[in-house]
Image (cartoon, rainbow, N blue to C red; front, top):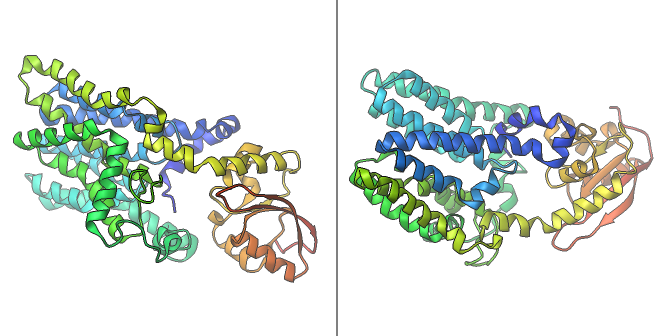
Length: 446
């Protein structure tokens, strides 16, 4: 289940129908967070190394990655996480230097925002709390507890949301739409194998960042440790640690084209470690003589970002290439279904459907989501699926073969509620899409 912050940030923009249909509504928050991430990164690195050229180098390396640029143009969660992570980095570095409570509060708010965007941010909270406990010169426990309360609001809210919506606080982790439910007991590379988990994640990170930057980051990490800059590297490494652990233990996987099964899937998870790979080389600038730092910064940026100039084909942009390949069948059935529904659907007649890939049909057809009845509504949805003879009233139903909607229509038929299959869409490498229209039977009670 997706965390709520991206949806909250999109709300002001999706009210403009043209922006929603074009995708701009989702791009605005991502782009704004990309800019915020760059600003916080610049401020944090400048404070870490007391060097403006080092800060400029790190920010340029972060911003010139085509995978980052792609993610900031679409309604995904990575840009939001980057903004929250770099804000936490900036505020934590500032707190150590100033001991100011505003920096501590800012860190708590940043961490909370991160927990409402991506689950790896949950993993950061105890480590950041320990950092504030260690670095606070006065009222250490107060600092750690205040940070924990502010940061912990996000996870507590989400667990309460799960309970209210589905009756179980752990629905995101164990429910029917969780990674655990989708994967089941299926094997994948890295499951219960630390070496393979690290190999797949490391390979994904290299594909997303470019091989040259990885070597620069290793050299920069050594230089950073020599300058006794420890916490920033540790904080930025933690998302990568989380994913290696998740691959090993939690039904999370990354597929890369250079390792079996030689395909793309979830490679964007490797972007979680990219801020580390952008920041570490800045230490190479910081250890240079002051007069040479601008030149060294230019060389570091040229070396790190030069990988993409040497490999300019978009097929080398792993996150983009995954999206292009894995969305081909989805784009095909969305276009065909939208073309069928757009001239036939009457406003107010309702569509019984599932949330997820099918949502693109209604966006492309110009049908507002308020016309659809999906599982994100919660209890009413569950009641309709289980007792369609009482609650199912929508004129249209759009299902993937075998899903909950498909099965509910089968139950409805047993009670004399007739839905006729009007359109069957078959696309290679995709489940069949079924479009039904109500042709008989009494309406449900709603």
